[in-house]
Image (cartoon, rainbow, N blue to C red; front, side, top):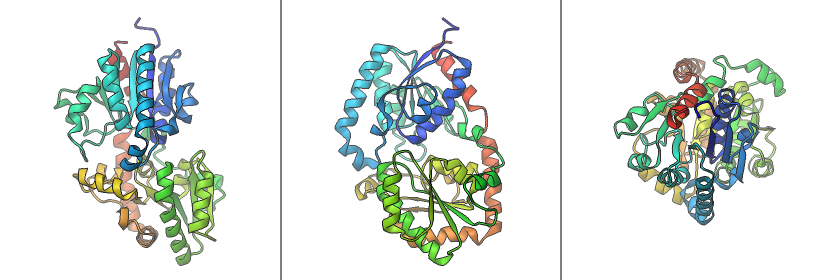
Length: 381
């Protein structure tokens, strides 16, 4: 029936997918108050009444080597999930990012007669472009966050819609710097460095220690600087241990969640590559992007990459507007030097903020309504 609320299956495999899906679900419920959602999701989706059949953190692995070690468990979850979804027969299945998990699941569901939608295009324009053919076999519609993506899929006969980025709608054009500083107990006079090393277990293992060592070097150079680190749920003990080991005596303020407050309050952020870098750009913050992973995962990834940028702000601007330090280049000394450089160059910061403001306007296009329209078109509602 055209007016009946749909039943939707979802998989959001990690914190960034949960954030995007949670923002969209709140809007979908306004359109379809009786909407039913189930599958695998995280706390932001659960807050919207989502029924998660497995804990989301089961899927949040870091790098190829780690995925191989967890392959049997992950493939078992995907197999059982697919069987249950085929039995439940949702009106559509929406895989949020996590292409290595979701595309295979989507292919099985599509073959079984369930409409499939993938939300967040894999970075086929950056690496592993051969996946486009596999995507065509798996999805009925691709929902793209960035305006240059749909033509890549349409050229291959795949339906694709530009929906913008929900974070661009939810993050204000003028960041609430003063209110965020007050909420975090920081003064207007403080110079603040935000540390965002990522929330997955592999990121805590490979990235948090080097961020802590960089903070120690920055602290030695400028003892008056303040450090704030937002901690993901369930990760406080691991982060505290890393800071105590690698940055003893450095006054790093740990806060539970509240990453948007931290980004709004800071002067510069040292940040792991991923969705958080786009959030930092939308908050108009200068940043140093870094990433480290196991040696095997790095060897695999760098062979598949065919553009010079890794961080989303640089990819979208087609330019190195912020520094990227990857693997061995992400040394404590390099991270500290590049972070301090932003604090000493106000004109450079102003130029960056102007570019990020223009980017924010480009990505702000009422994503929730565009996603709802795309879902309705796909399922014939």
